[in-house]
Image 1 (cartoon, rainbow, N blue to C red):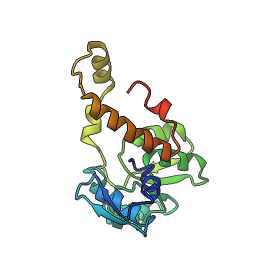
Image 2 (image 1 turned 90 degrees about the horizontal axis):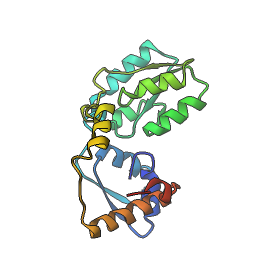
Image 3 (image 1 turned 120 degrees about the vertical axis):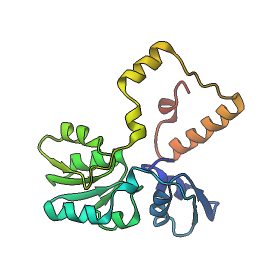
Image 4 (image 1 turned 45 degrees about the vertical axis):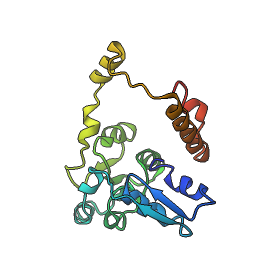
Length: 189
């Protein structure tokens, strides 16, 4: 699942009282609030970027910008979520900001989002609570590397057909539960 559909996926597991939730314990804790009838078993994994922001940094930024709404990604620590005005996935943040009447936002997720937020909403202001909200893994993928990969067709990954078919089935079910169109999302798997 993803941060945008994790709650829907957990709620769809009607026949299960326990759910093993990987890879992010903070997202799992957040989901637990929406499925009180289930026991969420958390794996101790986490997003190394989202845990870099602290409640104190958010509050300090809020003090400097009291009119700003705090938007936090559900993979942030629970204490950060507790002082947030709105908790949503990165995609949810784009939608929320676009429809919000607020003019200022504190964004508690990967800072690369600010570029698109500012571009799509030039009349609004955005702040980050810390400069440490940079994902080193995301920064490895550049347009140059994508272009090289497509041109050279190097580093091909081959997956056993049985594994591929099972993964496809799981992804198709996840997308169906979350209201996505599997045939569009998974075309050419």
